Each structure stands twice: as structure tokens, then as C-alpha cells.
Length: 139
Length: 136
Image (cartoon, rainbow over all chains, first blue to last red; front, side, top):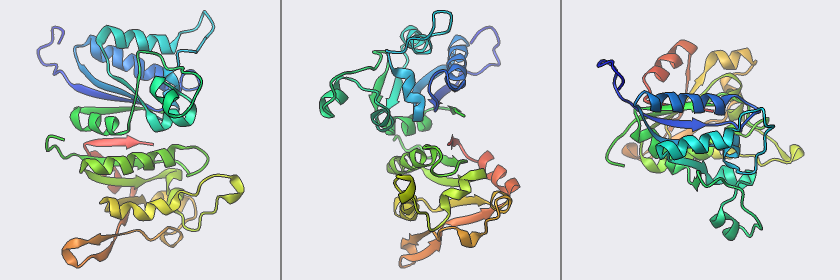
């Protein structure tokens, strides 16, 4: 916890409700998560809901002089071994697909970045129960 | 879930069909019911439109999910707060909303009103007392 003995380490759950680029929510969530980790706090889980699931497609190709939001999340996730979960129901609506979903729904492609996992809404509820704070980033 | 029971508030701020927030919020509430937390729902701003009765969606080609609200009592959702200022600002009255109830098993399954109309100030206090606020 840095050098300040009065700071208390907290356990955060992060909910991201908007997709990349159209809204700042994902950027804000990323910077909050990064700052919290650098301060020694724990991130129990990052849960992507609503259009937030679009943060998990590995097929995004932003202009070279812009940030790559997906890769940025992926790098943070890898560095800190983050549990980054994409809601299955929201993902199915919006076409975010992993191998399992492609198989069970008869799709001919996948697009999820390997840093993310598709799972159920129970993961969000559990994260809210287990964490000291749920931070919701949305519009 | 290790016996932890928190006060969960689901805060609904948006009209029902212009965006998907209302419907996907309801999906969280239904899934979350399995976790036996102390749950309340709040409806503020355009969110109060979610509870308006007589919704008809055929012409916009969307599913009318408003009947789901009347099933919330079966999911042990007994506390639904509607902010009176939000209603008044939109020219709505309590009579414009669905009548939502839950059944009290300790009193021969008597029906109890789920909706409580609260002021903005009261809702702020209720929100303050919540452990978790899911904002939609």
C-alpha cells in the first residue's frame, strides 16, 4: 500500500456497461482499474455488460494514432492476471463469440480476445457480494 | 454464497425501449434473485416509464417485457421504490403504473404492495444505506 500506512487495501468489482470508443466508460474503467492495482488494491473481477461486451472482440482495428482499447484491457489483464468476464446473454445478442458459443449456437467464427472469458450474470452478482465496492462505469 | 447478505439496489434510470438497459437490468435482477440478497429496485428519471401499465410494443417490433415486473414478487423482490418527483416531472401519477404485489407467506399469502413512493430526498437516504448499487 505505497508508503501511507493509513491507506487501506480494498477489493473492487468493476462493471463496464458501454462499448469501446462510442463512450468513455470503458476508458474510465480501465484507468480506474489500472490506478487501483498500482495502488495495491485488489480487483476481484471486471465484468462487461450491455454493449460493454464489445470491449472483448479481438477484431477491432482502431487507427494507428488512437488507443487500442481491447488490447489495452488485455495487456492489463495479463499483467495482473485479471478475471475479465463477458456476460453470455449480452454477448450472444451482440455477436461476441468464443469456441464454446460458436459450437453451441452453430456459428462459423469466433471473435473473442483470449484475455476475456464468457460467463453468466451470476459472476456479476458474486463479484458484488465478494467485493468491498462495485464500481459501475456507464453512460 | 458464504452467508453474506448485502443490500442490493438496482437503480433504473431509463425509459424501457429506447435502449436495452431496462430489459438487461431486469435480467440481472432475475438472475440475482438466486443469490438471496436483500434486494430493492428503484425507478427514477425516465426509469419510471418502465412501470407504466398498458405498454404495447407490437408496432415497434420489440418484446413487451413489462409483464415481467409483475413476476418480481415471486422472485422475493418486495421493495420497489418509485421517486415521486420523477413521476410528477413527467405528468404521471401512481395510477399510471402497474400494481405490483408480493405474497406474504407469514400471513396466509396475503398480497402486499411492492411499490413504495418516496421523495428524492428519501431515495437518496435509501441509496446511501445500500451496500451495492447497480446503475442502469
